[in-house]
Image (cartoon, rainbow, N blue to C red; front, side):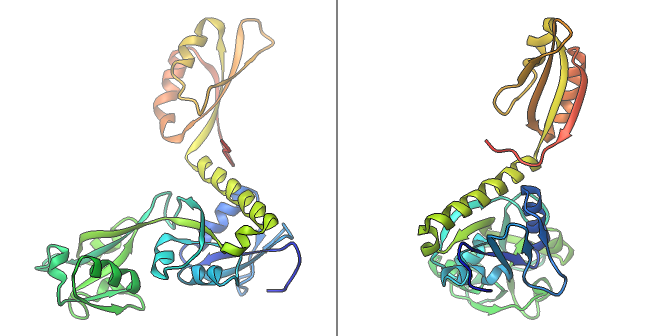
Length: 294
């Protein structure tokens, strides 16, 4: 990266989180172009200089000040015991808007039923440092081997158990594995170098990015709803609306009619619209949101 004044050096996670992260930034309003052969995405915001770094390494580069800030999982921050500023939690992952789990898993027919049964056993995982500290705190002595990948296929011949990341559990089930215990829940975090966080300009820049990312995430689970309501039905319709705060109500040119505009949870739509129609709301329009800033 080149050295420039008034420049924020941002690390974006390469790998499983890459596409979800780029999509989130674009929804937040940032225009980014990424060449298939380049590790340096280009922002139209010329005050941001970015680099694609594997999430596993991000916290180290942010801690050392090579990057001012970056996005990575809580799991990799804890794995490296990195001394960074956690600016915000951003609940998104490769497959959805929920935390991921690191679990101890064993073959379905394994005699291992609890963590204590791991004493003297061999465990394969990519999360070596955290797993060692976790089991040590539980006074469990096991052999922890670093896994370079395809961890699910290692039991029972190459390992007695694994500690593996799961979002849906589908891969574990497909490999005839069952979960013994969850040892860590992780979500994406926006982290900052502590020295960079003390820089007034960089801190403001980071806070602005986080606000827009959080707004874009909030919009993922919400929709806007507009409708026309007569004065006599207004109270009844409003009683059905679980507004973010309260509906925006505007008088229409037709006397005795109002326009209602509200933001609601997407999951409520299927149940709500028929009720609104039954309450005599008309001209109901559902629309997607880019950002919701509280």
